[in-house]
Length: 413
Image 1 (spheres, helix red, strand yellow):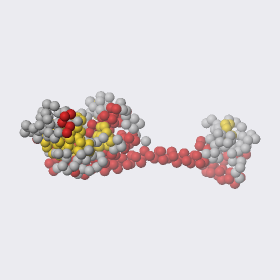
Image 2 (image 1 turned 120 degrees about the horizontal axis):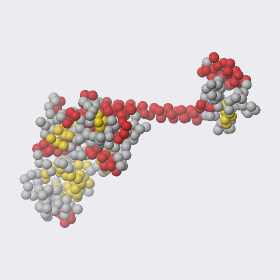
Image 3 (image 1 turned 135 degrees about the vertical axis):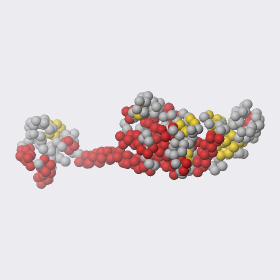
C-alpha cells in the first residue's frame, strides 16, 4: 500500500499507486526524496500527521507538519536539529538529512517532513491503560526514573531542555528501554532565556510547572514534569485528579495512593515537583546521586536479613538458639550440650554471665545444678531435643546458654 501525503489529494490511499512515483489522483510525488515510500498513517496531532514509511526495506516514521505558521515551522525545524545532534538509546535517531520539504502538485505551500527511527512499543499512557492503570512498583519506578534522568542528562548537556515531558511522550521499547519523544517543544538555553525573557508557552495540563505556564522555562522545568509523570505511574491517577489534587491549597496528596512506596523515593519525587525552580534539584547529576543513595538504602534491610538468615542456618541447633531460650536437661533427658566438654560449658557460661551481669550469678548456679521442673517443656524440632520455654514475666527467667494530551501553544505576551 502507498499513501499520498498531499492533504488535498482526493484519494490518498490507492493500491494502484503501489509502484508509482507520482500519485495518479493528484499528481504529487509518491516516492519522497527518491527513497521514502509512505505506507500508512499512524496518527494525527495538533501540528501534524505521522506516517509509517519504507526506506529501502527499513521501516521508519515520517512526521509531516500541517501547520504553516512561522512558530510551528520553527519548532519543527528545531526538533530536527536537536534529534540529529543527540545520539542515545533513549532518543529517536534522525539522520542529518532526515529533514526535508515536499511541494504538493498545484500548491505553493511546502510540507515540512522529518524522517526518524520508528520506536517499536507503546507510550506510557497506553501502557498504563493496557494494565488497567495498575500502579507501578517502587523497583520499576527507580529503574525508569534513572533511565529518564540519564536521557535528560544527555539533552541538558547539549544545552537543551524538553519542555513537554509526560506519559504520552515516553515510549517503552520491547527490551525495557524508555525513549523520550516529541522534541517539538525543545528549547535551547540561550542568554535571552537566562536573562529572564519570556518565550513561547508550551503547556500540558497537570505536567507543566508554574514558571512554564507563565511563559518561562529552565532546565529544572523538566524535573517538575518528570515528577508529575511518576505521580501518574505510581498512583494510576492524573495529577489533576480530584482524588489526589486539592484545589484549595494547590497541593497533591498522592502518597496514600501509591503502592508500598518508601519515604525516600516519595521525598525525591516531591523535591522534583517543588513549586519554584530554585528549590528543585540543581541538575541531573544531583538526581542520579540521590537515586543511587536510595537504592543502597533500600538494599540494606535485604542484605542484613540475608546475613542473619545465613548465620541462623549455620548456628541453628534448636528453637532456643533464635529466641535466646536456655536449653537445659529435664528429668532424665540428655542436655543438648551433653556431648560438649565441661570446659566448653564453662566458656558458654562465662559469655552468659557477661551479658546478664553479676546480679544473676546465683540464678545461673541454680539453673545448672538443678533442673527446672516448673517451666513447661517443648520438644525442639531439631533431633527431638527438649527445650525449656520461658516462664511468665513475673517469674525469674531461665538463663540462655546459646548464642524493594497534546500540549497547547500560545504566543508569549
